[in-house]
Image 1 (cartoon, rainbow, N blue to C red):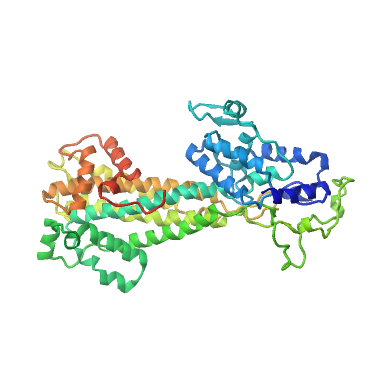
Image 2 (spheres, rainbow, N blue to C red):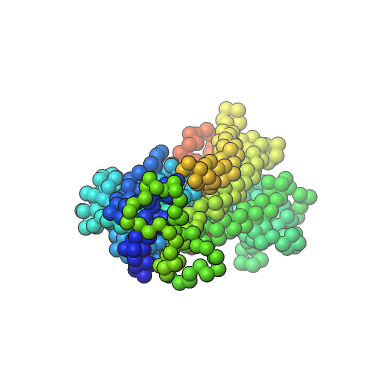
Length: 519
């Protein structure tokens, strides 16, 4: 870090005109700033860009945002002083988190608004979450109480703090973790429904899935076989439901049962693909301009890191600046580019939302089969004395409502763009909204899966037959929180209890299944 900072400071000393160091920003790139105002330029940048709006970002996400930006600054390619990174690390370690707002970034010239609120807190300005009492107080007071000295900005450092895709990536990382867990739970819950509807295991035959060759499909089929048919492998007795089907097999089931490996499989592969993109982005350097200690860009015929002199600059030119391209070694190490553009994580979040949504699409259809007595062979809406009781009628409505809501939310945010900064920044990613609504989609799917789990457990109890050992464990977990529904009760608190079992991974733990992601 110090070596790259030395390059920046030598450029300041020689009064070269370099974007982001001695010029304005965006459309003001041709405005040359007086040498005595270079520090003020950086403060003005942070203060003017604090334009976030909407709800406050949750504190865990602010931590991820801060940690991710520290990672970029520590790369040594942003030209900041090590002491600046040390201050940010103190804030992270002591949980002194600035207030950041959800809305206000288009995800192109970096996530400027949210990152500016992070930087503002580091300056000792704006609002900050108190790490112990949970209140929101002035940043200067919180930093002082925790013996953290606010940063003082030098040339380039304000820009280095805010130019990057960390908002999209932080929310994206959380979305990936949630999606991985949800994918596993959705497949386990599908197994509970599979048994409760007396589905035939023929469609899980490994030969079918090997013939197609998709890794996700083969993985899901293998998981389902392990849950439903693992009597031979693990010494368990095959459930009476499956044993009965082996004696009296169906020809085939509806797609929402028969095609679980195919549908859940592509969701599995989608998550893996998006995870690779987000992993790369989390470790990417997304500043501009960037400082490279090694190499001089010899493969580029003409470096454009210096602002070329034009007659339009006359009104802004200060007498003590060099306004021509020089061939100094330091200049060759600073290069302008576009790594701040959020198109990669934006597309990943849109794709992830589309993929995870399909878990709800097919889950809702299984719920429909569970509550329709003509299809399940069970009492309509899984309740005895139907008519007097409505049973699971309206939980299916809730699942249908959330699934349909997601159909709107999965419209790709990144298919849009809008010109900003007087058309200087004329293409943007809209990745921040892609990441925010991806998390909303996941939350809706979690609820749909929870409703399926409740309904499937009710169906198993109505069958009055034992299921496979793992399915029985899952049902017993649910019964610890939600009783068998004998007559109508208020469903909302029961649904919320099962949603929490899905959300916190309890369903996987009780089944002895390890979560895929790395904590």
